[in-house]
Image (cartoon, rainbow, N blue to C red; front, side, top):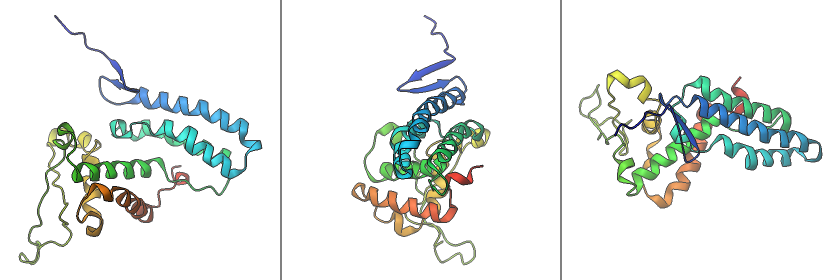
Length: 218
């Protein structure tokens, strides 16, 4: 029996297309979030700025951040639909409001989940996707002293050349370079009970390093 090929498939709230571009999914997410933005706009005159901000964080932003590890490899053109919704929300909340950009929040979520997979015995299908660890090697200049930039949790990124550009945008490969660049003390003694502390530390680290505010995504 021939199984028909589907051009679109909706699974657990995520719409997949044949090319895994997530174009339609992200457009529809932006539409749903924009509809909720209408409630925020109508309530803006009776809520203080703090109330408008909390309404956005609790009622609208979760729509923009559902299952990001699945679709975060989409091209920036499609991801821009989500950024535009957040900028419109900032216009309603009021001037002077600072929000982390959605891309920064996705990075924190992805690195935290990568930490989780490295610190516990996760599902075999997911742990098998992880790049293998790469032990420290002699520094290229001294050839004796170990390269200090390679912490014990350093991961090897070895991708097939034919699909390298596409695969590098997917989880977990899109985070390997950032993971490898994190301070060694943040990745010392990986333990599941330290995951929340790691999340807070990596958030501060990325925010300080890149200053990815929502208002920067013009």
